[in-house]
Length: 139
Image (cartoon, rainbow, N blue to C red):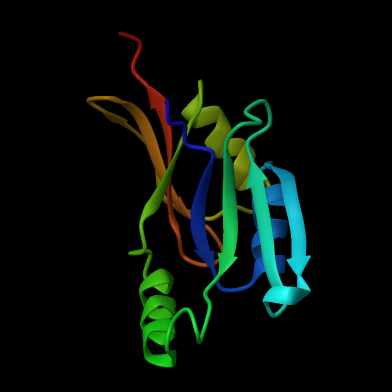
């Protein structure tokens, strides 16, 4: 059996992303480890409360030797446009969660609206990653 445990999320600044995901979105810090033997590579992950087996790795966009400078710059630009993938978060009450998160300073790109699959709202994190907040329809 295969299970998803971690998903990579590119971020511009790991400290800024950590604060946003924990203070504004309400996730929990899972791991924060710096590896000096890998050039001070930092493994930083957060996850939803009550779901300990799933984490988002808040990964700084690396330069050489992982990516050359041109690739790093292009990825940084794409990330800022919200085009570097997306995250879908499920909630049991999209409208209430929208109001709660707005109260914490989360900026939404789309308010909650009815969709064929449920109620959906759009937002972006501090690095530009697209996030959808979804309340599935009761089937």
